Image (tube, rainbow, N blue to C red; front, side, top):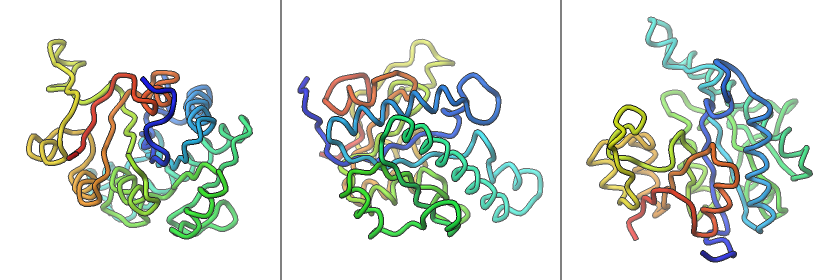
Length: 240
């Protein structure tokens, strides 16, 4: 394993649920601080980092639709949840003296800056961690799709998908102890096999832009940096 990072610019996708820790709702500041420390470690290695955080720990738009409500309104509520999470993670990063900016797909200038590719590339060039909030800014799209879209816009060399387990398995390892971890797959194999690593739109967008997806456990302290240098347990989704 090299001590030098394999990738110089990456997009980290973390679920909102990851921020809950052992709680049933909301944000566990200890967990947010730990994820921030992993991002800080990557920055100290010279890696440029963009981050997309989901909002499932606060609200899911599909929950409204499933009970007969308006999906568009529900998704707008979910977008606001991602902004809350982005602000929390930014706070944890700033406590570590990591220069950080939140760019929102929904304009709210009193709270954070608005997203544009130009602003993204400028902040990255200044050494800042860029946290993308508000999803894509459109209903009916998940934060997985937002992650793939922002990765393409920022010119990321890989999408790091932080999950509850250390890669993609043949079946849910929590339900099936004999499930095996897959070391490498192509984007098309993920789509053909219906593997629930990211939604179909996100995987297709990553494939079209030749962006590898690296699936790893968000819960392993130091795991992000270890995988950045070529080690650690993970599954690589790539056509190369």
